Length: 519
Image 1 (cartoon, rainbow, N blue to C red):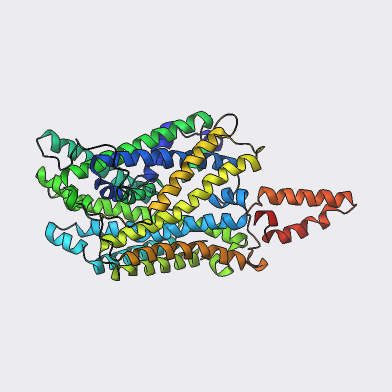
Image 2 (cartoon, rainbow, N blue to C red; image 1 turned 30 degrees about the horizontal axis):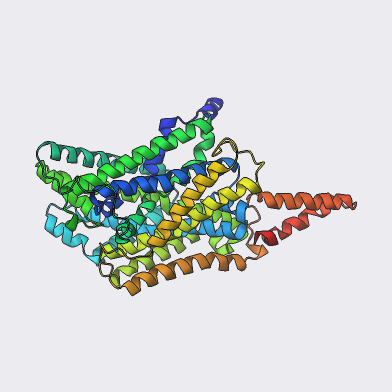
């Protein structure tokens, strides 16, 4: 039976659906509904310059290092050295930490709409203190559950993804079709321009957050080795998944625009208001509390999955000597408790920004923008690192390779992803005119200071490393250039009559200090 399990491979459509489930979230639909018909342009543009490049580049890198730990730390570190690899894994962790208040804000708003009085529900949803309390309670509850072990979280995540995302998305689209087919008047002008006025910078700023909608597709790259003929089937799965993802986003956004006038769209509430309006139209308002609970459950299931997820990667890297022993502490079942506590502290501090921002909506937007900025830095390192490794590790076996011969296609795909990420990065600093974000000084101060501080911290930690930080039982594999240095040292020792045993341990002891070319 064990042999049978080992031969089971993922099918093209199975992997496509897995990618859709991992990426699609409905909470961001209102942000793009602001743009009406041209929202479809933004979805397609971001899919071409970000979603597809991310999927293909991550697939090649994951396949290259499928038997080694580290994820993005490994990918970037193999190209640019340990310091930059640590920055990449740090950014992946910290951006997810900053993401929690935004996604939980959506969950809190969803819970506010479980009542039957829409006016009172909206008043509760607009209450900053209600949102703050709910965010903190749910997050810390998820943290304490994570500390107890996550054996059952996988099932919760699957149910939550279906109940809280897939089913509501399909229902929203079906309701819009019923509404139009029975004579409902659309609030969206389908005769407007598909192509936005790109000369107006305001039309691009809020749309830059769409890149975060597609973030996370690099996680699917780990499944390359689980497919038959990955060079042919993986691109098919990516394209099918990308098409389904774009269709869900486009039609879901249209469904909101049809039932809610553009001037009334609210980033945190419009999804629930849209469902409420549709249910009222079909005389089924009793469904509103049910869909609110379903959406909230989907959010909570997702947060449960992610609370301990990225921190595990940082924990594994930390045990190899990149974090002080305090951060390597685990509870009796091996969960990285201190990292989770620190993570919770950061989430709590960020959530307190509710009291200084003019509204829940502005808080939601500024944290979303900061999340985008940090994640895009990581992606830019990943895209350029993949190109660099084509030359620095040209003989490395690549079970999945972008382009059968030469490096032209990796330059095109990786370059497209890098330029798209760079464009979104620059635009994300500009406050969107469509949303009241309060003082521009506060907006720029939070984003610029946030980026500078979050990027500086890993470099400071790296510079403070000590040999005592290395956990004796860690099994983190060396980088390829470390192995080459060891081989070279051993060869040199043999040439002068010295045994390799007397050389290699010394080299290993120095491995915590990065080689000069890699700095």
